[in-house]
Length: 130
Length: 372
Image (cartoon, rainbow over all chains, first blue to last red):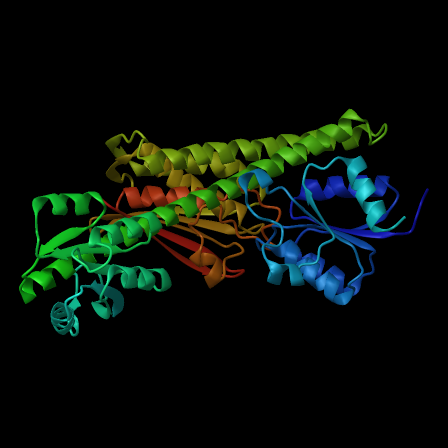
């Protein structure tokens, strides 16, 4: 089933970006890709998309949070997935740490990188309410 | 000026006001610390009152009489120890029996001052307890900082190692399920990318091992009288293929021979790091200048490129572990983020220094000086 939803994928790891694009297009979505926080900011300004998958650490340690904030500010209902390879095993916190952060970081889903494509597909359809 | 709060616990009013008078304008300074210490003074008549004060505010030093009307000083001391507060206790008593002194110090009192004491006795007691408290707090702070740095290093390292694993695993899974259909070239590209990422990971691990060796001081240094011109030429040879790809012009100015007493492996690491950066961050058709000279008992290496350059802010954090400058211009340049940090440590080890001059889009110049 082909559908016309567009998904924005942002990651500074070129291979990860390629793979996500590959899978998401296989699911039948259109894609927009950005390789940096800066590139992504331009897309947020100028293009239309229905869901965003954002890497957390790019130019800044919290690039993903910043982008998520900008997207939600423009369109609070647009679903955002934050993905990172910072393992929870290192106890490095990548979810909002406290109430103040929670009040402005409004990602809909946090995913540890290395996610299986079928899981990703399920999460996307769930968030797009398909 | 740094303030410490002293709690004076004694049932005799004369003693309390006496201590107050001596310490009111008293300050302590140490040659190793820029600030002077001065003291806020609080009184308590009984042990019960003292406990109430300790529970409700931050006390740094407690001057504690043992013989009190209600509970004894030694019991107050026990209470303080159980509470694990960060304060130092000095016992005062006229019944300065050896037994009580031992019992009090075993219970964590820092020191003991017998009554009657002179102004000078009190002052030197306060001075020594202040020094003890300061050093104890400083050590704790340093331990915590070391732990935080180590933790940060490990989390970044795990991120840097997991990214290539994820990338390679992702390609393998696509290939395993033949998701790219029958297009062989797509698979070839994935294999190529995977090999690239594995190479990057290998470099990171090698760099990290170098760094650990240097930091633990276990790196076997072999100091010999070596000719660094020879090493410089060797390093230039090894980067030549990379330089040719970018059509870079290399201008070198070396003396015939330049001998210093150093570890050849270390000098090689310095040259390789600076040269490979000068190539990686250079523009096509650019140039690299490489000078070696001997001036005022110092050997000077200068490596200058005509590359993308850095901002002041980028320059300032350049020698930190895993610090890679991330921007549009650097996104396709690979590196472990450890090279310059390793280089800096080696230069420190050789009691040398490194200076950077850089202009965005014009280029960067690294000047390393090592005493002969």
